Image (cartoon, each protein chain N blue to C red):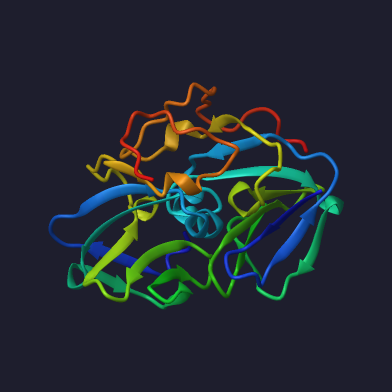
Length: 133
Length: 117
């Protein structure tokens, strides 16, 4: 079991079951919302259990996607493909010791011009692979 | 991300960096990158929500889509703004990683950019 939370604590949760390796996403939307680029795991929807969701707000970023954040502190928390039974969860929200590692970089073709990706992990121009929890 | 808040930065910007402190990691969902400019040079339009994670600074975000946009120390006359929010090319190059002592355990920093504890 891994716990996670937003910065202010108005959203706290537990993840149980299998967690996908962490994917870094460099798409423009993830760069805008995070302020740099985003990194996240993915779990089955039933494996996300809230201890508190009083701060949780959702933004419908496209017909297929809602993005969850804390309305009190602005923390980026979730990405929900609405047609799927999984939810994508911020790596930065997780307590240390999750045992997860970053596996690759997605949407590297959309990365910002001010940084380099140089950690040796695979880079993909768009999304690829491992999207299932 | 949603466009409710827009900003323009006039003149030179300083200190392009990536912050690995736990507060920035929590709020961004991974890491936060920013540069700063004198506060009057950062022209902001739209309803910024502010959260004070500590007594020394406030953090600005969009209440509609959750984008983490600004960081302002109370005792400084500069405003930090997210590099991820910039439209198109920035012409900026990162100068440092900061607060790397607070970094997450699921990634490595290997881009050769100087690291500050």
